[in-house]
Image (cartoon, rainbow, N blue to C red):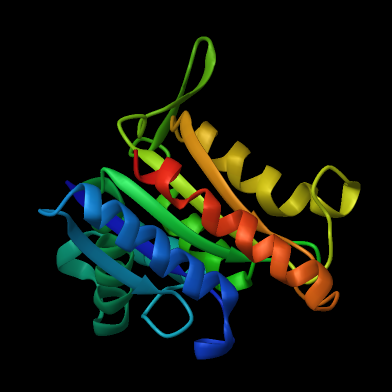
Length: 200
């Protein structure tokens, strides 16, 4: 089984989403000793933001690409290859300003490619990556689940992954992490209590 572990927090060792996503991976590894893990930290790994230059590079015939275009396309292809090879996704997704980190959005733009991970047909959009399951590890300083301020966080990731065809989506959420220990500690305990269920 291949697992792709994505981290997107800019807080390094102080990040709760990084710690929890690591614990999720280890829980799955206990159930799957032969697990093959690929790790990408989108805050430090080479991940491109979608722009006109990248689109131009992809649209240029391979033999006509300049050095910069070759480099850009190679990064995009590597990110896509990791995604396509994965049976399981573990995505660490902290909330920044009511949404996901821009680095995580950049990664999403690299894997959301018409004709590869989705297509349009007579009945509308069809996801092509449905043979995967995903675990979203969502963290937030405040409490946003079920409110308008949470729509661009967990809900967005659910919709996006569903659009790509992934229906087995599980969420471990820890909210209120900046609201003092009386809120933070129970939130972390509740999140960790779900680890055994995620690995099943």
